[in-house]
Image (cartoon, rainbow over all chains, first blue to last red):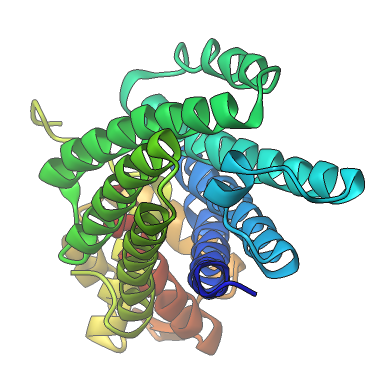
Length: 221
Length: 94
């Protein structure tokens, strides 16, 4: 297996574990608090976790990263190509839907329930194009959604954030930065940039892990 | 309610009562009423509810009535402490 695919597998599988852990704690907190944002965070991070597991699995089995799959498809069997394409499409779709759910959760918390009906249609429509175009569209849509989540996080934090809330904000900012790099890597088909983006995304999930562990140990600020 | 002051959720009120009971040890209703900032009528309703849920227990000695946390109430407060910390991290409030 190429070292790039191995690094991608390791970083994504660790990020997936943190995403699933965050989803579990959001679910646990939602049992007491019953908040639409917590519900969205729980579902969103669960989808993100599954998506990252699928992407990590694709890297492990095919020995290639998403950029390699998008850029070169010649010289492999038809069934392998279909499987890697399906896995990559599933990962990108899950990721986009995950951030969409989180963004809708924040939007409902801030602006009421009238938002978030047009975005799912855009996500479904995007699946009809090629993997290259879909990757670009997916990362672009994810970037917009993440920018919205970061903005809402900033608004909510300024109002009632606890002393650990800056960690969550840093996590979302790092994931946002990672997706900027990932989008560029898909545009220029740069495997090195793709690894940098995946590493930055992992740092974002690491910040989230520190927050989850500290909130369990320290308690509210 | 003062302008700009947000209405407390039922969960927040219950937590304020449980925290008051925990801080006082054997808490008298007047102390809980003061710490939880509730009217007597509402406090009685909430205390009955928390007692029915097994989170606090009442002791009656003559005229004096006091409240204690049950083991279930203690573990509920610990769970809520973690949940509150998590929720605050995402900029939310209980």
